[in-house]
Image (cartoon, rainbow, N blue to C red):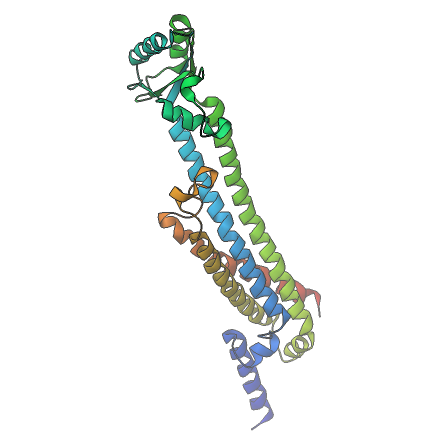
Length: 309
């Protein structure tokens, strides 16, 4: 075989190895094992695992804010306090006023057992409601936009001075604000996770480039361009980022599936997780991780190759 034929064969073999990113020259440029491979796989898996929970938090708090806002806005409560012996008369008068209010549904006085349940977190489950001067609570559903809470409040002050209207604004606004802020924190966490992943992959790619400086110099001598050399690194690290993120995503989805469901969780943790089509959203994490790995590795490789001659 002639010398120029041998050189052409070597260049063709080199090119095929760089493009395929599998065995041969590609593995000698970017080692398939070693600390850079382990670092990329582990960091991608860990960040994807955390991203699943950040995404679950963002989606769950969004649902929580919508539910708190809608449920609390669908009813108001009237608290009726009266002197001894006049409680029933005051309550009946308030019921008549509410029934004549436009936009208000059929009012319902809460029985003593429900009032005891509402007071149980503060006074315990054995509190004798009948023996204490506990005011009557009337729940008023809102059935149309014609309901005017300020007008009802003024009428109660004029005709039933012992009745106080509570439209839940004081309670609703902080709860909805807290849920919306938690959703924003979840989104910010996803952005920070993506940035941290890009940083780790960039460091791993630079370490691999530095460790293979001798091989890169030889490739340049035989005519390889920087974009060709960078292609081998981009392909390898993109594959590692996607593989690690896929494993981390599956582990995170499994952990989220083991969380208590909506009925069992209760309180603030109600519905923390994915619901319905929301289970498909974590599957985008490996795709995004691969895109982050592609961009981070390409930037690091081209920048480092351009600075080293």
